[in-house]
Amino acid sequence: MLDRSLAPRALPHPKLPEGTLRSLTAIGADRYLAQTVAINGVRGAVIELTLPERTTVVNANWTPAFAIDFEPSSQLATWYAGRPPEIDHYDPDHHTLTATVTVPDARRDDVQFRLVDPALAGGTTVVRLEAKTETTIEWYADPTVKAKPTARYSLRGGIRGVDRAARVYAYQANSPKIAVIDHGKLVGELPFDAPDDLAPDRKAERLAALDLRSVALYDLAGKQLWKTAIAHGRRVLWLDDNSLAVMTSDGVARIDARDGHVEARRCGARLELASAPHVSAPAVATSCAPDAPAP
Image 1 (cartoon, one colour):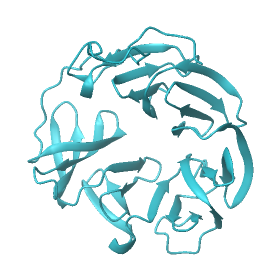
Image 2: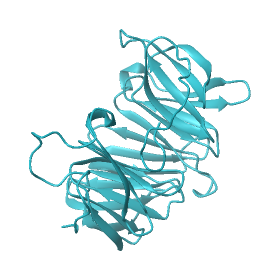
Image 3: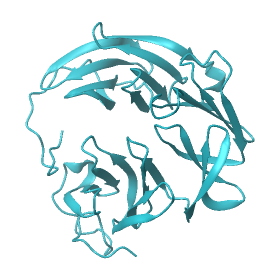
Image 4: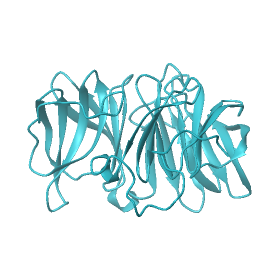
């Protein structure tokens, strides 16, 4: 765990089931839903981790996924990549997961779910994505996805992100721009090329876009609010305090979303192996270098 300055946060080591921690997502103050993976990489467990040191096993016989998405407004969790996608309702009082939607294993690589906030999305709770020859997007008010979708849209292209208001951001085969699709309607196109990673904020008001040279913040009309040079960016994430974390090939940087300045940096493979780039690193800007104007 890292603090705001990206320095290690001293914590007791919580007891984990056998194996290693694969992924976790915040479900409350100092509370996380996490997956562990056994040494053989096949089975694992779902746990609730409450800092500093309490661990509660939620499911002890689990096929691990690579990603977790949790929506606090509905207490729904979804899992994808590595296991058949599903949606579960999490009961934090009894520490139980109850499956509400499952997908046959044969379609595990075709279907994904995105969880949204019904208060922001006009009652929609789930966006279902299915990739075949075309990508089909469906919007559901019913969290069990048993009722008919309230809207549907198909495109030739791929999904770059879904915000909590259920707007879908996608690239289309005939355009380098990002299309904005809202409940079955193409409502706009952002005036910049498809980034390597796109992260809507929690209020569905702004978009962080990352490429290999920089991270930028846009409003929903596509107006650039700021741009900051960050080399070798891999992923951009919104943090609970509305700052941004940019994961890079050589570390992590914390960005102030108000003006784009770098608040803190931490370098080294897996963040713990070095305090500066290795001497053999190529002579290019890195996430650990001083601030530089964005290209």
